[in-house]
Image (cartoon, protein in one colour):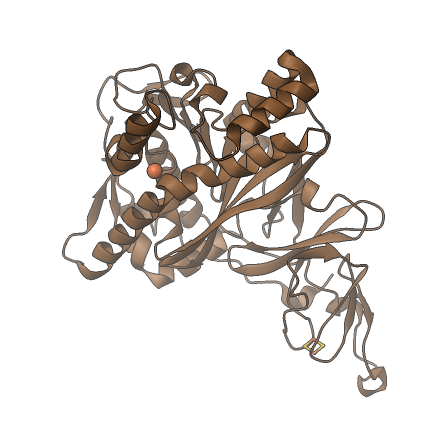
Length: 442
Ligand code: FES
Ligand code: FE
């Protein structure tokens, strides 16, 4: 155990954040603008809770690795020679250099570039250069790379935590599980051989929570994305893109699922996925090739797994599942800087045209309308930063109306345009921030 790296527990924060998230749905501006609150989030939320790190299919073979982040901490997720997963803090135990600067690869060992200490891919310190200089008290074992004390995979999605006491992932996913399972089952019905590829990567000048809110905020869709909707309508006719998200009197809904997780469910109104995809270059030829290779039934089954699946499932704090292989990861960089990285899974055993279509459609919405969201989030961030006299943001929509109901499992269901899901996430934010938590490095 590298005990020299354990952190002191945070203490005395019970109730400290209560006044920033009010029961009437108002949330204080400082939680998006205060660098000290951001630092606390990196400990309490991106440290003290489960955080998504990587997908197993990104490191399928022995000795594969991928670099990622836990909050802002650089992390290497590795698969050892025995197939076991490890999550290592990418920080040399000698003088602190980043050990691995490569995004992805296969390596049994990592060698620090500064003084060439060498670590195994399970974190063990294997060799110290010119070892005679270190006295008899030097403890090699205490200089293994820091390991996350908790690491679990749920059906390929790998989560890590610095809180050794955090509940098992399946329990923490809780009411988010059925929708996550639905998305995975739908793909697994056609293939169990997946690989993950990168889609669009956005870096924007706003707090990470704006993105987390935005993906469960159908209220903005008819307005902020109006130009995209109009272009679709005029060029391609009705039934493309997001034109089913246009009002609050329909069967779609939002849900707060507990533990910060939330869902915007479009499936009741969306209809089939493939006819809703927008025309893009090559769409018809790729579809024709798939139908010719696989026949009508299986070919259509592939095409029905392209484009929108009808779910926006946000696994708090940093994973956004869209289904049909598409997901995104929110990466906080600073109080007013965030990266959002999109990915899609491909099927190793499907026609290549299917994989091409998946790639085209994970890019599609982001290139067309995602930039509207980024612009809105940056406008919010800018205004919140410079107008301290106006303190509150309003997430009260649906509160105190008969539009919300709670079922026996605690899931709160609200009208599709209401803040039910987002409000729940802020209650969880307050709970996590108020909690005394002990972070450790194993
Ligand atoms: Fe890594 Fe010195 S900082 S070997
Ligand atoms: Fe949007």
